[in-house]
Length: 220
Figure 1 (cartoon, rainbow, N blue to C red):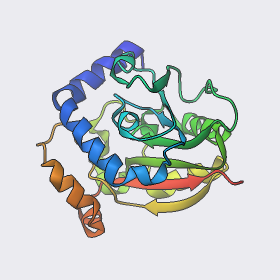
Figure 2 (figure 1 turned 60 degrees about the vertical axis):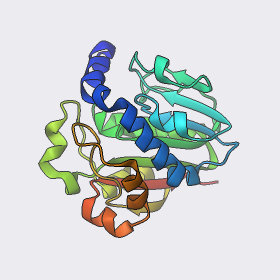
Figure 3 (figure 1 turned 120 degrees about the horizontal axis):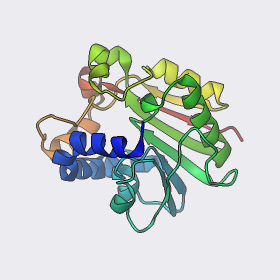
Figure 4 (figure 1 turned 90 degrees about the vertical axis):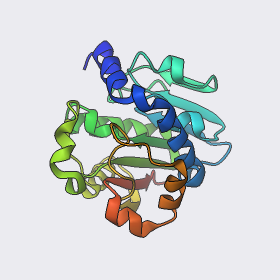
């Protein structure tokens, strides 16, 4: 997808709820995802969108990778942007990172080969013992609604995500088939306090979750 088309699509989809999304992501990071990141860690947000995760996480060094030309103006001053394709060699040295985080991105790549190429770059850039955290829509949970987004190309489930990580050299250590609800786009804005409650109640995940959460480690 061309960069300007990507930017336009993002604006149409997320601009009306951008402030709300940032508030929700602050809760998600503070109450769940920060556990994967130590204060001194070097973290990359793969397919960072408008930077909701990387802007809110506490880390020693922050990197964000995305081709959307709108991204640069939305990232914090402490975030280094890598404006490049995810499936091409990343502009980072081997073993540079402690954590790679990716949310609702891999399904937007053109094919499975591109996903494996991106995961291979994550493996290369992570130090031994480093962690990758993958969040994304679970085709088994959302079914036909998966195709409501024009730029979804590769359907994934928690099992296919885990298999792709293993094929890329990772050791999978956590698989949650249903975690967060499918989308915050085009829906009513639930109270942020409800998000905090949701994160504390795994039973609600099994009932309402439409996204998998899979984490893996680069072997030492």
